[in-house]
Length: 507
Ligand code: BG6
Image (tube, rainbow, N blue to C red; front, side, top):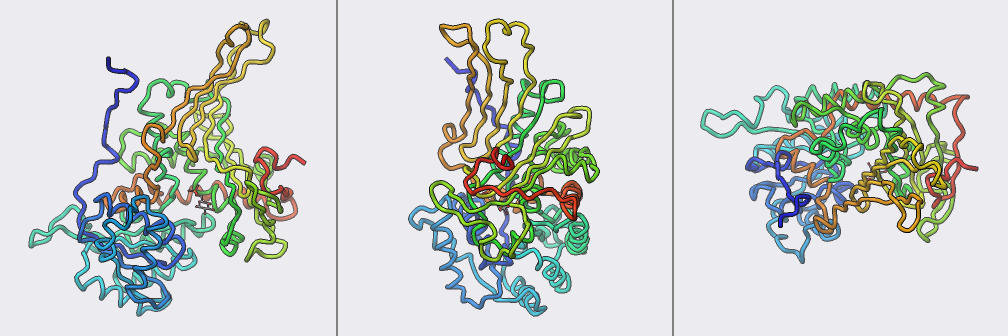
């Protein structure tokens, strides 16, 4: 007999991909950490799954002089270590043949001339530029690209139209990594620079959390079911908690992190994106602009708090020496490249409201930290308690409220906590319904970067941040960071590395 709970319907809307054309993927910062950890292994996986057109090419650019062969060696070791689709070197020769390298300093105008000439010399004419270097180099790189005429602004829009000979008009797109600015003003400045060189529809601002399967599932879970949406409002929800907790300290990233801190590194982007997806209204369609419009409305509904409002809603901490998962962890202040006496926060908690008809008065608590006892990213929706009247006389404790936990990582899945009768007694016991992604779909879900790169190649910007979205999310954290400056700054709470998040701030 068919199991009605197992009937599956494939809508195919997000995964539908038109036949991909050959493309040149130009990676600025190709010898860097991000390229080797995420971008190149993701491209390898896309190649192995047939998403990259066989004639596509990868052109790495960075300052270090290197022959194509050395670049390919680095590429191989990155893919061996990190590509989900690595299988004893299968398909490697075909992938390696796509890769070449150009040594060039982004401060040197000659680099862009070389690049421009290279692109004219038999590379596919569709070009995806990827800025994977330090964000302080974004402006000069964009300016260099503008001078060399590499952008899309001023060219005929690519993709749809046909050239006189019948060939498709080639496109040029740009992927920009985070952090996108360091406050609203600089994000606005960066937007102006970018949109002078590329059309907004050709700009793909990455937040890799949006490429995670469990994050994408939020839209499906909320809007492809009828049982949760009627409860998804202030009448039934008491509080929403959004956590992105990490065991790792800052490792070798002190130079970047000390100038950023947890709010700029995590809250402004990943946590605020989770807030948007948890709180947004159903969009009228799955069109990228329809979805992003709804997310921007959520951001605009977060009030401008007064300085004291920010202070009473927030908390900041910094890790001290301790043990994480049995290994010792040095104090943040002893990490490489951290300024002596730095007050950069490695833990932040910030409670906001989404002041609209659906959610007015419901606190959304955003919390993130490094060097904690566990790594866990999840959204916990806590529902209002049921009235006690019926069970007050027979139950020794107050009724726990229902909770829905959307686990983003590790162990992606969904838990629904509910109350039931304990067999053999009149007491209430807590139970849960569980859904685990890995049980249903194998151990390895697609990597976020695979999905995002595939979308950028298709020109689908649904999972990328729009200019106004980036600026509005900075507006929310600018006020918080401002309130943390000066003589009224809240204390920077020390916590021993390996502490549970709930202990931070509990002296
Ligand atoms: C990055 C932050 O954007 O996200 C890092 O810069 C953080 O500090 C990382 O560790 C977390 O990503 P993930 O995918 O490991 O949860």
